[in-house]
Length: 431
Picture 1 (cartoon, rainbow, N blue to C red):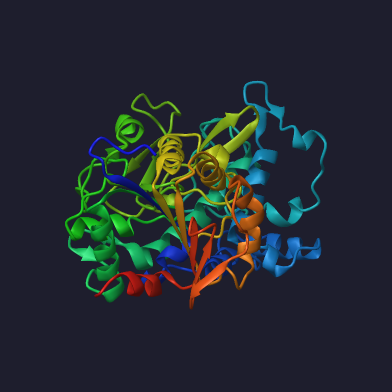
Picture 2 (cartoon, rainbow, N blue to C red):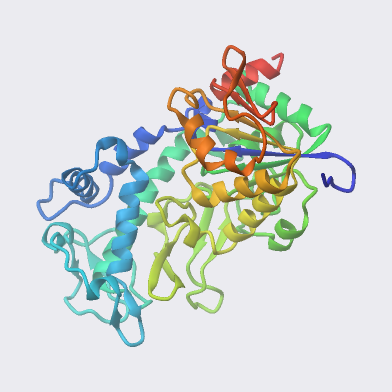
């Protein structure tokens, strides 16, 4: 086992959606309900486009259990690809549109081009014939339907950011985070205890700075990919410190693998060219206030650059800075960790799973602790056995019950607490 130069161990902690529920973050089903009610209306001016897409999935054999907010967002993202040009200069249509003909256009595309002429810098009216307050100028050869869908996605992401604000808003002199709650204090005590013997490498799939803020307030400093402390100065945007993300493996860190509501996408560079950059800002950002910034990470596949990544295009979007470098750090940390805590993660993101599989295969001394109250109840243990246990060559796949809500696999190489994060913290702390 490799350790860092000061001989401390390495603890990696991965937080999924369930890791912040004790701080009143929204549940998946709540975000799904939010998205179904979000965005623009169809041409009947009553039904939201997202609800139309939801009902269309049900009609085509999906059950409600198969559909969440990421499923709906992914549909919109795939439509953005469909209605984008494969080659902007030659105005070639997308590959999909050469083969497929949609039957929903009359319902979904409730907009018009202001002035009626599609030219450089045109604007949209949403709904048809009515000026839209947040309409931007089309300067990057967007087709009108693509541009409409980009505006729709920005509006949905804005509503998600608003939900994050409800539990994670934090600026100088104004915060909704309860620093003195028992769960906050227990979390800080646990982290402080771990930090005495281990370098802490925290990774979250959520869109907040919650744990960074709590630990900074308690005196434990963490690098979050940007050079800042708990409070971000009001008068500046901070660029990512990419060299430090890639090179400093011995600092305590807190990285947002799927982005943060506190990040902002700057669509144009200093020369007013379309070279998007993601920066950290003092406030939670609402996407409708910015310009839709799209790019092609693969030929002909146009994606919206966003400060938070959701849907099923995470792998493609994670190829831009600083997502790419943070994911690289996670991959490295998993491979050389002494222990990995996985908290409230449902193992639904394969690019994250691949890092864990690599660690299990090549790091034989690794210990993994999973904290999830539904891990066995929802038969996630069976899924985990299929996806991950084959990478552990020896041992018993069957769990051994150590005590109530505590199970062991492979002679304690994998330990599972079937309890919520707050209950787990009660177990390991005295507060």
